[in-house]
Amino acid sequence: DDNLSHETGKRGPVWSWNEWDPLEEVIVGNVNGATVPPFTVEVKTNTHAKHWEFFRKHGGKSFPEAHLKKANAEIEEFCNILKHEGVEVKRPDYVDFSQVYQT
Image (cartoon, rainbow, N blue to C red; front, side, top):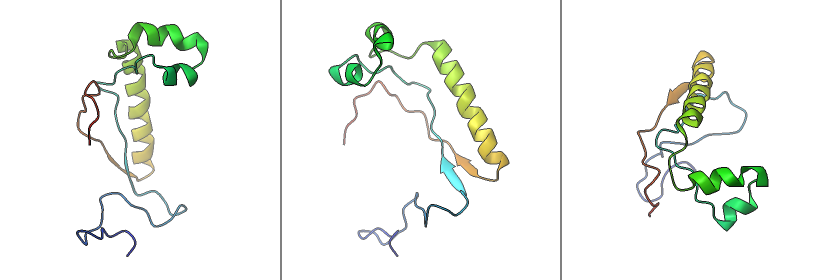
């Protein structure tokens, strides 16, 4: 089976058979604790100039509460739509986005 881990012989928690079967289960993240990326050259290159001041002002800090409130409302409605369609929606635990990513 292509979805089995070669190390453990166990199926991973996330996988799919194909691209066209109905969606049965999905993980939908959240924005709680999300921080604005620092205004680095990468952000500047990939962001329209009209948004640069926002990144200069908020980079490395939490998103403004109004942004988080709107994003959470949209995500919750998206989850409601998925559930209404019979999809099992899983939500992750809180993540502190201010922590540096490590492997």
